[in-house]
Amino acid sequence: MSALLDRFLDDAGLDRVTAAARRVMTRCEELARISGAESGIERVYLSPEHARANRLVAEWMREAGMTTWQDAAGNQVGRLEARSVTADPHVDRDAPALLLGSHLDTVPDAGRYDGIVGVLMAIETVRLLRVRAGDSWISPFAFAIEVIAFSDEEGTRFGTALLGSAAVAGTWDPEWWTLTDAGGTTLRQAFLEFGLDPGRVGEAGRRPEELVGYLEAHIEQGPELDQRGEALAVVSSIASARRFQFVMEGEARHAGGTPYASRHDALLGASEAALAVERICMAEHHVVGTVGRFEAFPGAVNVIPGEVRFSLDLRGEFDERRDEVWNRIAEDLGAIAWRRGLRWQAREVHRAAAVTCAPLLQDVVREGILTTLPNGADEPAVIFSRAGHDGMAMAAITGVGMLFLRNAHGISHHPDEHVEGADVARGIRALAEAVLQLGSESRTTLERIRR
Ligand code: GLV
Ligand code: MN
Ligand code: MN
Image (cartoon, rainbow, N blue to C red; front, side, top):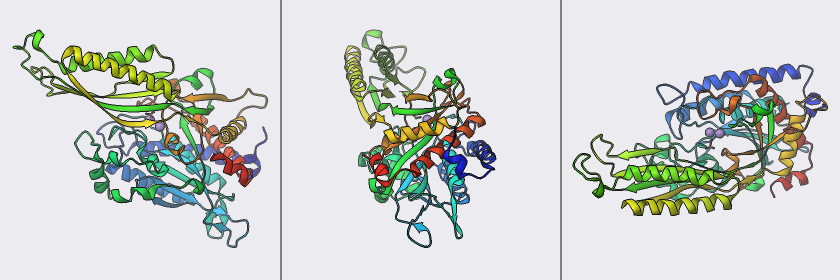
């Protein structure tokens, strides 16, 4: 399939894409070594590892020709200025930017690619598309290209999610400042310890008119592409999500001396609640619920648990169905607590609406993928993402598009997460082609992405 990228790159184009994919794979290994855990990968928001990863990625961004900064919420950003059609020198510093990116934070005992591969592919895309202007590199388009490495997508430290992208989208909620991590550090304290000023978080916010759109490459985190034997997919939409933190309170009593009739065991109540989540979600298509964190107190072998803290992560293709399921779960929790003489409280720590990817961005991603397929091949796969992504927050200010890469057996949030270098090469090609397609659109069409 003839492609803008083939015409844009010189004869060595194919080699450059292959070299770019190799660099991405090597750098995924390098980033995997930046971990806060003794074994395995763990990089959480506002940790020393977050700062180290940002520094390394900033170096790679500069090497690709970008100017870099860390924003007021700890996101690492690089910018390749736009080409001016009128001015000399040929740089337009006021042009809006197309944002490419993903996240650098990880879950505990993570894989090497979730988020990371998307950031590195974005840097390589810039490197393929940059053009010379005197001593510096610029974008070949009338828009700038920025790469953003979001600082907190997973939300595993403070229980909520998308803190980095929410700051950029200007939807930071002041109630988050009191969220605490497992060690009791508040988000506010963590900001200060990292060297960020909580009072300035608003400065990370971007205005819609500064942006052309947000495009992200990410591993699929499910088995569909692997089962279809295909490398890449267009993402049509991203699931809606809500997250809660619960406290189930009973009475801590002697494990031997307390008869069953007078026990108020918080762990048994919370366990029933976790089973109710599974039963209710399994009866509902397209809604999944997970209790991923579960802690009993005082946590002694001979004491009936007096308190249990647990989490709920709820996802749905449609916001309304997700909310109906939540109402049923809350009703069940109330009934379980009442029957067992327990008290319960829930704090909602994250809520994101389902997001439909912008039609024009879906189109260019599709065009990009087509250039990686043999002539006459079928249409690329179109996938609805059950996993959450930074685009869910970014959709508040700009159009969002996503490209998925096959990951072996759909294993993710696990050290066995795997992506093939050849698929990364296809992905970079598709992403660079998609950006070139956007570059050939008129300004009016690009402005429509936002609406
Ligand atoms: C992020 O990976 C999420 O879907 O929770
Ligand atoms: Mn993840
Ligand atoms: Mn991710």
